[in-house]
Image (cartoon, rainbow, N blue to C red; front, side, top):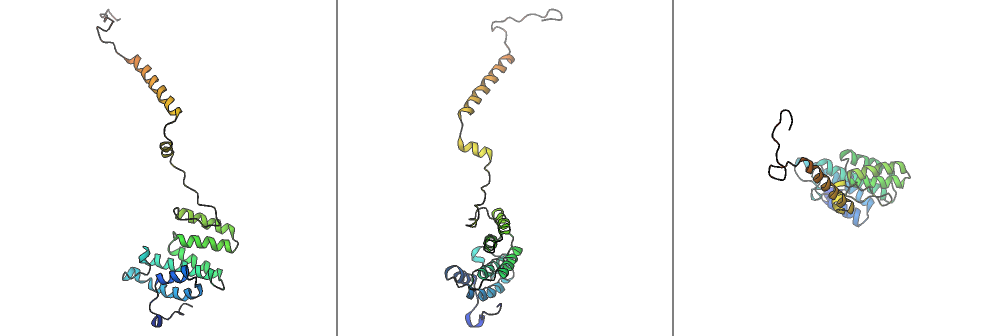
Amino acid sequence: MEDAYDNEQHGHATYECAEILIEELAQYDKAEPYLWCVLDHCAGCDANGMCPTAYLGLSTTAHCESAVWNYLGFVNRKKAAPDYDRAKTYYDKALELWPANCGALSYMTELHLTTGNATAARATHADFCAACPSEDAVAAMEPCPTPAPNVVDAARRRGPTVFDGVLMVLSIAVVAYLLSFMACEPPGCGREPRPFQGGKW
């Protein structure tokens, strides 16, 4: 299967064309040999800058290969005669190269659900939620938990309450009361200073 695509007859395979075969045309059986050719071109990412996935911001060999392995897993899961074992192997390879590959984590979760392995699906989904908090969760799973907001941020959003106002008034009253004991009366303010008389004032 790895050498089923003929470069000389059809030209070099590109990741963009693979995407069209998979995402738009759903030609999974045709996409598999095509992807093997794209995988070979990922070696150029670190060597000569000719990276098939650079237009996606994936400019390293590891990210490019991970993206292609991910699609290889996807087409093996979706083709006319699905091969779930091979799909899992390919997803594992994608995640070995790039553990935070959100697509591979999402598709691996779907694979586990398809094969009835709910425990593995939950574990992979948790990894997905940790690595990809801004991505949409797998539809069949619970949404990723929203991180708890910072308490100070929450207070700022809600604004002051009546309780906050009461606390402020009480604080001011307590401070004023304490300051009244510390006030020093200068001479001529109603109390005459007493001269020193021995050991007493």
